[in-house]
Image 1 (cartoon, rainbow, N blue to C red):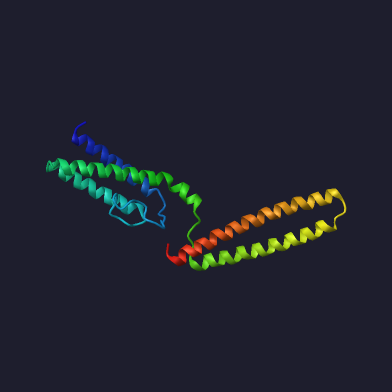
Image 2: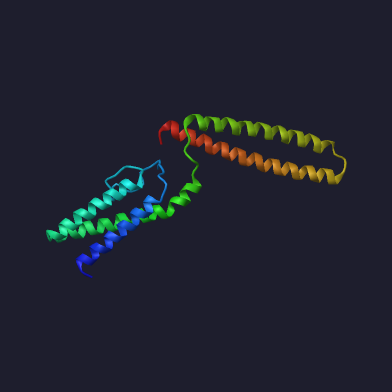
Length: 178
């Protein structure tokens, strides 16, 4: 394959990447998305990384015209690595969005924390009430029914406490600037 055809293939890949990025909602990343050796950017928006790839592609075309083989080889490898990294980022973006909680404003996160603390308090009260009811029951079927309800409440309380821990960690990360 000649150099012109390779440039055209790279151009097509960059265009496809641009379309994919344009169709992706802009999400902020808490850490740099890519290694500093791969991109000069430290931004969280994929469109800015794409701009860097496009600039490198323009520079590659100029180096081809000037017949600078070392620069052509270096830039071609860099562009391919950058395209691959962006494609991988796009492919894992949806998974990451599902695994992370939505970044909220400070007042929202403290409000959510208070709400979950209230849930925890109410669940603990409900557990105490059910335990008291269990002690008072005389029939086996009634005791079994209340034990099932207790197990369900304990599961809800456990999930509530896990959510509280996640919220507290999120607040801690925000306050420490991580």
